[in-house]
Length: 107
Image (tube, rainbow, N blue to C red; front, side, top):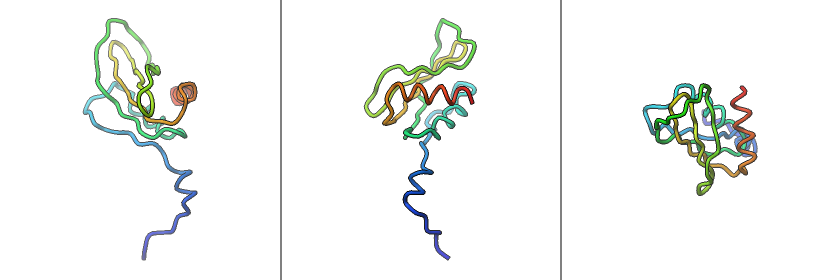
């Protein structure tokens, strides 16, 4: 018994992005959102980054595209007084990424 043969076009269509687990702490509720974002077309890698504290208060989870980086964008996730950087490698434009984020935030 060998591996089942799979058509290359099927694997490309089923391929989803990768969520990198490099930190032990995350903003509460962020990981399920990032997992859904990885399922969107055009998202290659999502890497949560540094957590920090801010003075302002944001009652609900918010994801905002911050600046372009090589191969994608840096996104800022905020909830309460906590902020976390998220690096997204993608071939989407900023507007397309903002649309994808809006879709996963509603789900």
